[in-house]
Amino acid sequence: MNQQRFGHVALLGRPNVGKSTLLNALVGEHLAIVTHKPQTTRHRILGVLTEARGQVAFVDTPGLHRRRDHALNRRLNRIAAETRDGVDLLVVVIDATRQTDEDSLALEQARSFDGPVILAFNKIDLLKDRAGLLALTQQFTARDEFAAVVYLSAEKSQGLEDLLEEVFRILPEGEAQYPEDLFTDRSERFLVAELVREQLMLQLHQEIPYGLTVVIERFERQPRRLEIQALILVAEDRHKGMVIGRQGQVLKRVGSRARQAAAELLGMPVHLELHVKTRAGWVDDEGSLDELGYAR
Ligand SMILES: Nc1nc2c(ncn2[C@@H]2O[C@H](COP(=O)(O)OP(=O)(O)OP(=O)(O)O)[C@@H](O)[C@H]2O)c(=O)[nH]1
Ligand SMILES: [Mg+2]
Figure (cartoon, rainbow, N blue to C red):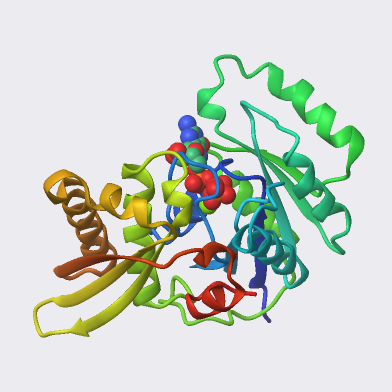
């Protein structure tokens, strides 16, 4: 008799609602990078949760947005839309404190999804008064049908069990498809590149973070530590100096914080070396995007 459940569950929503924070909270690891800036996530990332009730492969996606100004932006929406097609269940994440016109993009994806959808209101820790949640729920459920509605604070790990109960109730019976000790489908190289990008996004301002990408040039496992060399690519030459900072201060700070995060995630000391180069216009060049690891 097999009572265990298995399935893929996509997290969809506009940028900045807390999808990646939720993925990390569910899995208990810092797999997906999180910043206060919209459009942080650029890749589909699996976070696998294995427990007595079964196995859930949560899939974090880039925030659905209306910017169409360059090829990378268009790819991000496509990744989210395509992820939806391959899963058993959707979780549409809404920021309980602030709804925008871009929320409708996730709701549209949900409408044309041929399966159950959970509506998740996140960031409820920021609400002074939770009374408004009822009216908000009614507003959403009047327009669309949901298999369940849950209220979360991904950041404070509140409501996660409510979400998991619904997920395990809805998912079909099935055997685990991923090894029990596996957290993600992404390589250590990928995760470290993302941790460097996370720090760059946090340290830099205005449009610069959106023109940055990180490539791991060397990744060597030595007996006592990991030797990692990463290249930061900027889309415009004038951004290079800003990434480096006066006397290299910005780059130093990015390197030391990313190194710490990588050591924590990978469970061993890390030596991280960073370099910066310009690759003009990579964000709007299909060939560069392919080469730099952005899914088509
Ligand atoms: N107060 C509060 N902040 C949260 C919560 N969840 C996420 N945040 C914050 O919201 C911001 C965005 O979080 P992310 O997890 O990066 O959001 P995202 O939906 O993955 O965003 P994109 O990757 O850009 O689509 C970060 O500053 C988080 O710390 C929450 O439950 N409560
Ligand atoms: Mg994200």
